[in-house]
Length: 418
Length: 99
Image 1: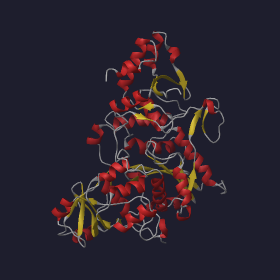
Image 2: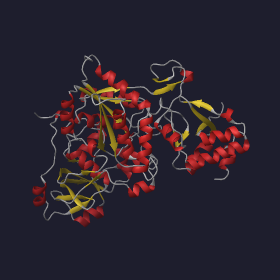
Image 3: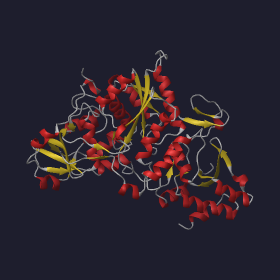
Image 4: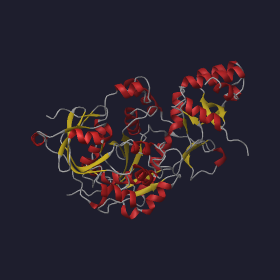
């Protein structure tokens, strides 16, 4: 039976058999790509970005900038583009109608059928997607760093990535994910978007969303799950290392704060744009394709600095909910109330003057100072695992350092085409 | 209107607590988040901007706590040592004069 994704389109894996690929790419030009583009090739090929079949042409980017829709009328909020400099286009001698091989880590990764080469005003993209043209916004900085031209066309993966330890169990593409949900008997699944090691505020966000998602369903059987979908992409110094993020999220299940019957951890390759409301829409699309029915959105989802209002993402989601095949589950902040003696929600507790707010940033600060947070704030099993990850994967630190960036094992590698 | 002040949370581990106790300053600690001890020093607007510039890993948690976080541990140690020396949390001018 066809699996239907965002925009009502069937999810199709655009992946070629290696033997066929070997023949197909003979004599084709090769273009090396950076990690940003490699992440997006995986997103396109496995159907995470369905209905996209490749990198966008000008009409799609225009549609997104004008009214947040692709040229075919499907809701879409962030351009997925392939950039090349004029010099590269000239040096490679590529033109519309060519097929080229995209290589990553020195090996063939994907076939790229070039349909269009065009220019686009980067400020227009920034204003439309990020609501600002300020180059201090990380999404704008990324957009301004794009090279002179965009190249649109279809992508076919010719070489599956080898997902390296400890990440391999967590790479579950859309078609496989949907099978897992069926095996578990989950009829509703709510997404938890993360780039963090979980503190108890995150844990209660998930538990609250799980309850909201159950709604009117009978609770006799475990038929609702939480899917932790960790965003794995470009790292900044001071972020948690990827290994700690994925393993510690799963530790909540392994240590019994959740169970197999209601919790699953996975990853998606994506470089955060920090586009706030527009990224919230993108996340809804991504998780629709993964087969989720619900998606939790907290305060300032995917925001950065003070560019967006705390609930702007909620308002934008509400305005397009008829075009989304996923139900947003909204949440307020969770915090510690010394009067209640528990982690609670702004929407529940009325001891406002006593509230002690905390965030992922504050928890990182506590750990940096060499202090173990109390179990009500941070689970001891998770803390111990953070420290284990620091030793095993982080060159002594649970946070990204220059040494980690230079010497870590990549999350995935592209093997020689066998 | 009073000038805005931004806290820097110096989280108190055993080593720091022993130092505070030794000089009779343990009462400067506040209790936070289900049992954590914290010492707060404050920066004004200009000092906050300078801290964020001088220490690029530092982050102003504008969304949740309005505090300056993620200063390297050795920087926090220097601030802490200054608190011990001056027996006061009013150390920011002197601390930043070295940068």
